[in-house]
Image (cartoon, rainbow, N blue to C red):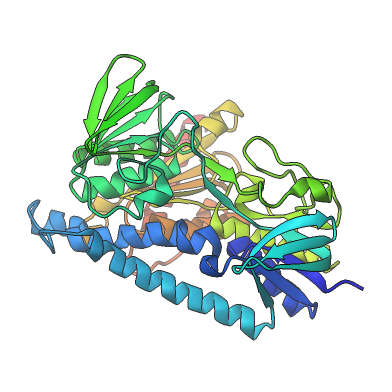
Length: 468
């Protein structure tokens, strides 16, 4: 007889949903987590703090209002770290309370401490006081998440050379910053600090940033970031970073030298599986600390599952939640419905933000899929004028023969909210005709779907006239 039917290691988005799903199914469920990390990285050092920081920056700088009130408009002249952290800590506290309440309400037991496998059914939990408690479970879900990857050649000091976690703990806003790595996290923080007035230089070894996104959307973002005085150094690699008296000098292999107050490394994420001692359970993690799973999130040991960032791409809070629910259902032999498909929205919280669902133009071209593009620009919408957003855009990719939506790409205010309309239309298998005939509230940004759909329809109609 096991202590628990389901034991979840980690209380981030994937772990929370797995545990609550297990409890809702009437099974004895527990979660192992460090007392100060309820909610995992998502709540404490990742998604929630960074997105709250973004909102605080937009509010205090008045950046979104400058098109209406002038480029000198600013809500607060001297923005401090205390101004930014006050809002962040408030939101983190509220989210932790919500998670505690949800777990308690569903009678999920919390086991505070650090877990490690003793065998494939047994986990030893070392508590805050050093005491060790051993528990057993019939099914186990690993949801330990990740931490920032740290190149061994870099001397992180938490002040002048930092990772993305340490950046949130800085005691002052730097006047200049080098961001190494133009992935999602690097570009998000580059845009935030640029909005604060920090002189930002982004160094990226590849020839473009966010290479999984639509090229036109990325170019639009790059233009806006350059308008915030962000400098890009593509096809460049950092040779070393020298630091002295609180200042840094980043030396590139090309010979370029970039002085800055702070250097932030955004070198990807590393699964936190070392302390878990997964080998004792018959598992192994790759060099990045990730654990391989099948389509049901089962590991090589059939009764052990893994979800969230620790299994790799897409490593998003939203997908992690659904993975956790599905893993728990499958582990407890509950029907889970269709497989988690490709229609998962991607949201990038840069300033301005990006979001998309489906395929890109490059992917469709490479696959020889005939498609047409429909575009709507915020500057042509009444709501765009009201918001003061003249740069935003929504782009629809439509199958030229079947008229189905193949991709939706949004850039600008509300992009991460707006994309869900396209996701729903695609998920229901509706054609672009639905958007053409639909009535949207006016004035709204959602109206951009109708404008873009009409644009695509008119282009397809012109081709059809020529052919007939």
